[in-house]
Length: 252
Ligand code: NAP
Image 1 (tube, rainbow, N blue to C red):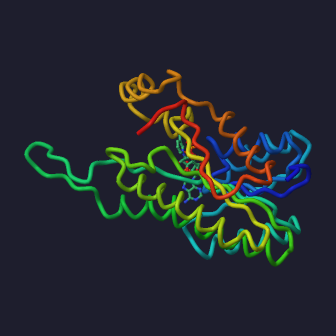
Image 2: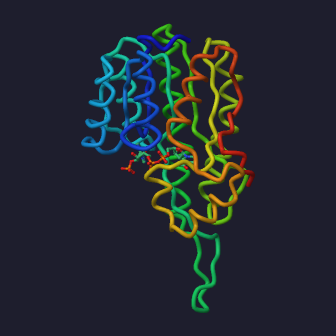
C-alpha cells in the first residue's frame, strides 16, 4: 500500500510510540486519525502531523469502551470518507507479582490491575479492529491493521497481566489475518523489545540498566525504529499474519 493520502488510525497516538509512528506516516503523506485519552496531548500530536502538510484529526477515546470506540470509528469514517489502516498501539502497564511476600504478609496482584491491563491492551485492540475492519468493508476501502504486541508476550516476571494481554494480541493477529484476508484486509503485528518512551522511562534506573545490559545490541530501541517497521508493514503487501520482532536481539 502506498501511504500517500491513505487514512490511518493510530490509538494511543498522543505520545510515545503512537505519536512517533503517526508523525512518520504523516511524513510519507498519510492522513491521520489519532485516538487517545487526553485531548491536550492529542492536539499537540495532531499539530506535529499537520506540519507535514497532511490532514490529521484528534478523537478523544478510551479504546476499552465499546460505545466510545464505535462513535470514534463512525466519526472518522464520516470525516475522512475512508479508513485504510489502523495501528492498535494504546497500552498500559500495571506491573506486579502474582504473589509477593512483603514484611511477612503475602501481597497479591489485584483483580483491578489484571483487568485494566487486559481491557486496554487486548479488549481495546479487539474493539478497534472489529469496528475499523467493519468500516473498511462497508466503505470498500480495505487496508492493513497493525497490532502492537511485546517481547513480554513470551511471559515476563512481574507482568502476568501484560504478558497475557500481549500474547493474546499476538494470537488474535494471526486469527484476524486468516479471517479478514477474504475482505482484502491484512493484519500483522510488531513485538518491540525495550524502547525509549515515557512508558519505559518510568522504570527504575537500576532495572533499566539491568535490562540494557542483557540486550545483545547493548542499547534500548528508539521509537523511530518502530515507526520504520510500521511503515514497512503498511507498504509491503505480502506481509500478513506475522509478528515482526524488534528487540535488539533480546530473548525473554
Ligand atoms: P506510552 O508512552 O505510555 O503511550 C501510550 C499511550 O496510550 C498514552 O498516550 C496513553 O495515555 C494512551 N492510552 C492508555 N490507555 C488508553 C486507553 N484506554 N484508550 C486510549 N489511549 C490510551 O506507551 P509506549 O511506550 O508508547 O507504548 C505504546 C505501545 O507499545 C503499548 O501498547 C505498549 O504496550 C507497547 N510496547 C512498548 C514498549 C516500550 O518499550 N516502550 C515495548 C513493547 C511494547 P495516558 O498516558 O493518558 O495513559
